[in-house]
Image 1 (cartoon, helix red, strand yellow):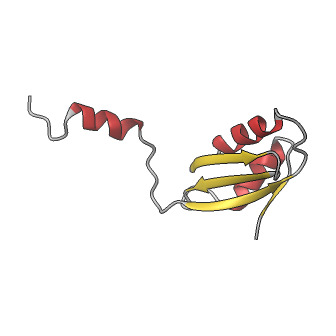
Image 2 (cartoon, rainbow, N blue to C red):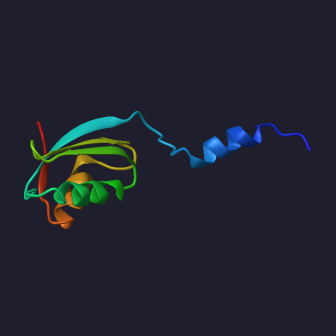
Image 3 (cartoon, one colour):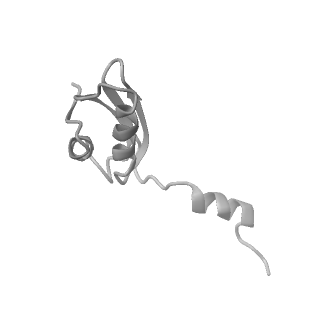
Amino acid sequence: MRWLVSPSALAVLLITPAFAGALQTVVLEVQNMTCALCPITVKKSLQQVPGVADARIDLEKKTATVKFDPDLTSPAMLTKATTDAGYPSTAHK
């Protein structure tokens, strides 16, 4: 059998998330983060949003820096995700 794509290249394609558009970054100002466990909850809530490529949470600054595909999600959807998890947020301007 002749492969058009090598099996290893195919495996990489299958496990790599496909992002249709160029990634954008937004910084969210997150309320209610008071302990070391809060950033974990915020990060998990953001990672469940389709299109989120990365979420970095800073407890000291009370921010979440999120890289996302704007074709799949928006800052409004990201703030909804944190708010639904008990951590209201707003997009930093």
